[in-house]
Image (cartoon, rainbow, N blue to C red; front, side):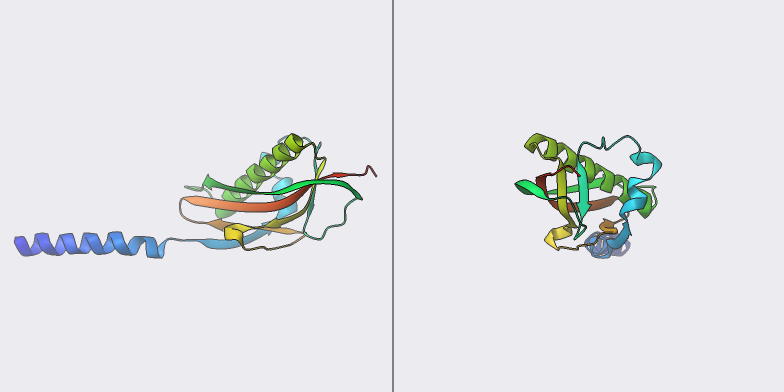
Length: 149
């Protein structure tokens, strides 16, 4: 009986140590447009702040008001990776909009993915990392006042 108990305990400890090593952390590149046009996104961004990704052209910058990173996570349990990633991307965009308003900015330019402080610039895609329980998006951008077109 002691042998079975000992083997069970050793197996349990081994699994507890090995489990984190096999945790899923999939890198996904998803469409910015699709995320912003999803039904969940409707009405969440009010249009008072314009967003420009990567090297996307934007109106003349009148004043630079600072830079910041928004790094958010969301519960991904029982959701598809794409749904969880789009949700956390939208939450990150809302956070950028809120910060822009606090600073008096009317735009965020040069927005890049910045997961684990690794820059990934794209005008069409954002980077998300999805696991079994958590999905995360980090975006970095410059808060500015731009000229009206």
